[in-house]
Length: 109
Image 1 (spheres, rainbow, N blue to C red):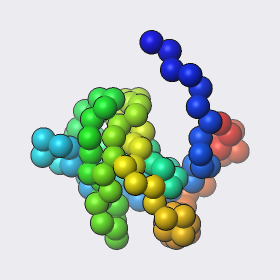
Image 2: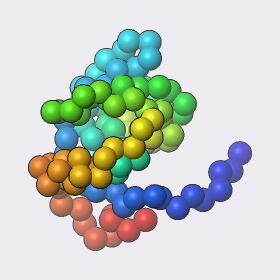
Image 3: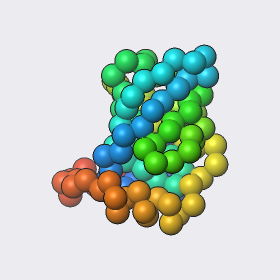
């Protein structure tokens, strides 16, 4: 089934932010958020296997738990859409603290 192309609401911000992850059935893992927007993030873990539609609680370092749903999976990475968007100044603060360099070719798209 092909999904229509949907324009992103916000530009991805590259970060390296430690996070704990818990699935709805209680499985836990340590991971890293590699990019973030107000609406979601890319989460990378080593011990959990994601599937589209899976419910998660992500607790980034220094924040309360964020609930969301897995929208895409590629290897050990998953795109997670937050149930409630983050306040934009919170995203800006996280990016200032945890920003990473992204080559120009990766930042497009």
